Length: 431
Image (tube, rainbow, N blue to C red; front, side, top):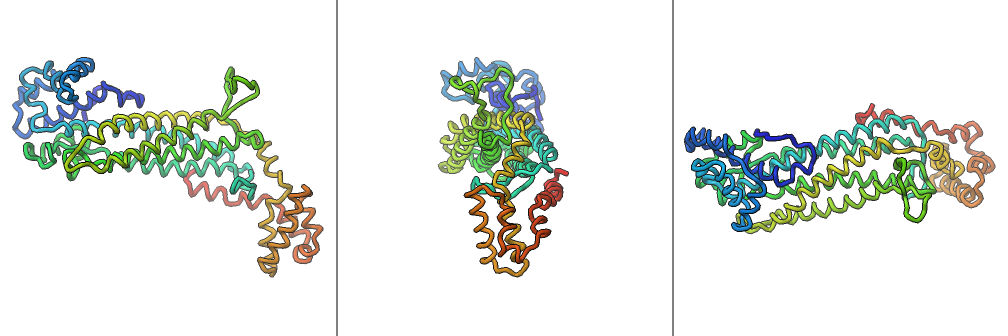
């Protein structure tokens, strides 16, 4: 594969310099393949490889006249190469260059995204381990449910991010393809062998079949994998936003020295990064929808997809890379308040043990309906009076006729809620 310079940031991949560089990489790879096939003489290939170059400003200047970006690019390259340039783009069509170059860019982007995804899982794993034995309240419908491990929040996100990584690795395979198949994809002017050799030079695989374009289900898969990862990030962000609410305050985003939360209220510390992630995830989903719309094109090709891709491919790639970096820092520096976690766990005065009592009563022979009514009666009193649930249970003769004091003491123990945490984390590959 031809490599001209190192791509360190996502913006480098989608700028004009790299865009034209990828075009040139495709053209040179095709020339090398045609040379091996005996089409381009050795001297001309040597001249092309040594002299082929471009200038972004010059290409753009020529395009103002030609109104055709590939022709403008080829004209500029010819200014560097001279007479041997007659072989550049020989037997090819614009989409051979544009689509194969886009594949190179998506491949480069996917590799950078994968690096950041893996970095994100590292901090999620560390937090999962650090808080695996920290009891917290689990919530369903936003309402206190039963105790759980605070570390399981991070374990869940870690596991989901690993699925996103697998999807992105599959995408890397999907987008790492090229074509040199001509105006309607039937190799009328160049042999499929030329395509195979050119793709090999670039570290790509030839598509099985194309029209004038590489089919856009590949691009849609790329965009949807990004959108799915964005949805996971939003899931994490929403949980952090909830945990940072004043009434909850189990965790909050790091507030750096000199940072301000509100122009009006000096006391404010807002979950600004998490809220930003929620907003950006919406853009990723919208762009993924646009990629779906690009799949259906007229006949062998139209260009309704082209203008869309010039926006959505760089925008979503850059956003995804940015979001992963931001979330990695956020989780790594997340402020967690164990004392508030414990306070919230005990907020409902023991109501979290209601299911255990229900199960013990059923195990002793009570019908589920009767047991449910016995427990719910005391639970509602606890809600209304804030009297400890255990006291109410111990004072209820209907319950104590079935369960003795020792059994009730055992019921009101948190131990069972952490018994299988290590097992879950082992299954997730954390321990």
